[in-house]
Length: 199
Image 1 (cartoon, helix red, strand yellow):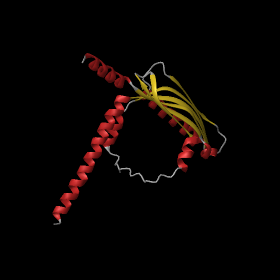
Image 2 (cartoon, rainbow, N blue to C red):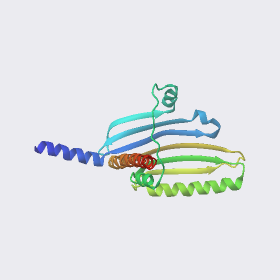
Image 3 (cartoon, helix red, strand yellow):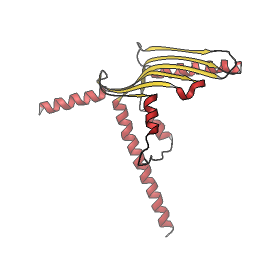
Image 4 (tube, rainbow, N blue to C red):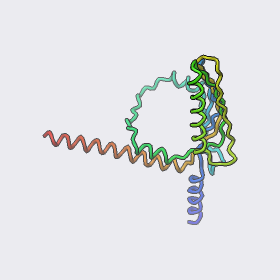
């Protein structure tokens, strides 16, 4: 009995401390070559936040292969309205940026727009990083540079590691399922009341 209790205690602690890490190994985007964008993302489940037990790698080659696969069955995705409840659910998932390295070169035909755009993007990025970086030893670097070549262009290079606590995703998933069921029951009850009123 003690062994079983110990096993469940370790399991619960492991789930609470486990993390899902999104490792953006490479993301290169150029406005002149949008179709040939290069990216490589690794998504892994880390037990106790340290031991990687499950992982999957996604890159542009795998996405191209998926586009060529035709599914015999059409998947039905339930329609969801974006409301305050969904926004609250998203807020339950807290992201933590452990590493962030961004190089962004921007150019527009209008110098004034370009200057304001660089300032706005830099300010927004600073706010986002301030709210999502939770460790003082996080490796953070970003450089947003205007080019002043009088043409509309964008050149982006990004590497980053983002972690999410597994327990937050589990809680959000349960709340999300409850919301979907409540919305479905509400539609059914409204339909029934409408039918009764026209009998």
